[in-house]
Amino acid sequence: MDTPLAHVSGTLLSFFNAQALISGYELGIFEAARDGAEAREICATCALPESSGQQLLIALATMGFLSRTQAGFALPADLRPYLLRDGAAYMGGLARHAAKFLYPLWGQAAAGIRENRNQREKVFNDPRKWFEMLYSDPADVADFHAFLSVLADPFVESFTRDFDFTPYRSFLDIGSGRAALPRAVLAANPRLDAAVCDLPEAATHMRKELAQAGMDGRIAVYEGDVITGNLPEISADLVHMGWMLHDYSAETQATILSNLFAALPPKATFIASETPLDDDLSGPAFVALLSINMLVSCDGGIESTTGQYLERFRAAGFVNVRAASLAGPRVLLIGEKP
Ligand SMILES: C[S@@+](CC[C@H](N)C(=O)[O-])C[C@H]1O[C@@H](n2cnc3c(N)ncnc32)[C@H](O)[C@@H]1O
Image (cartoon, rainbow, N blue to C red; front, side, top):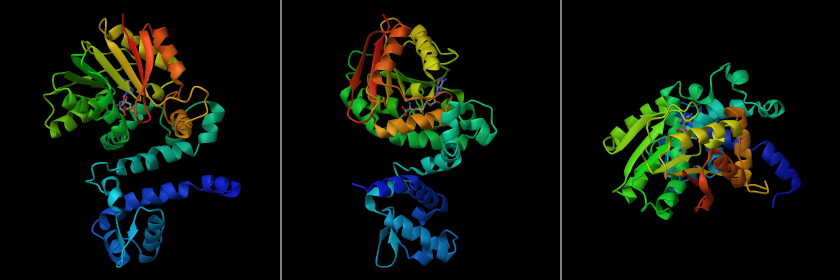
């Protein structure tokens, strides 16, 4: 257990850790240390002065992101998938996203809380909506969906394993990012039809990813907007939308849910997967902080309790409204259209 002083000072300075790791990604340290190398070689590969380069290497090693070898530094085996560009769970996209968007926005966290609004206009001088701004550069779209799909991995695994897909014939994932979920659902249930629907820039990125994976004929990609209600005709009997309600205010969530209710065919099941706050608002700590992240970055974004989500489902017209827990952080919020 930390002393009170360590708790306060450690929290105030916790950005040291994050910024050192971001620097490691940005400067190419992990690629340079991929096969193990002396400090001098790593600094030369990364075009860094030996003195400051070594300061970073020492710091990353004390944090466990590099291991010490007799000759110098190497990568810890269990972190290679996260640290290397060709790793299966590479998180360099989150490093870039955090450096470009989240750090500047969190720099105005107190103002965001005082004003109860996002800080994008102040920080980036950009009046557009969050997804319009984020999606204006295809590299940012790729980063965003790459790290989100890694973060979603445990959810995708437990949803695919533990949810009973047998009553359904057709699955639609709205706001699907990289289509990781429908790919996994199809792999486990090959008799299902699968489709995705997302904003145009995300749909363009998804088509590229599906083509690269040889899945472009298997998953139909539609463009649509759940806020304007400009949606393709939906025939799926199972519709999922993951980690999107929390991007928006309670009022916009109500609009999204009633647009979806109107667009779904009768008897369809709708599931939103979210990371709710505990009913007594006592945690989880990460979700409580994520709520501030949504406030400063998104358009009214906020985390809610399971009870609040389910009440919004009922208000939109869904029946048989219920929550189901999965292994991992997400809860399934389920409703049916009569
Ligand atoms: C935070 S990401 C979640 C990605 C993924 N579903 C997951 O569970 O990790 C939110 C997704 O919702 C999409 N989205 C946001 N606003 C939308 C809207 N108005 N209409 C359709 N999709 C939207 C984004 O493009 C993105 O793919």
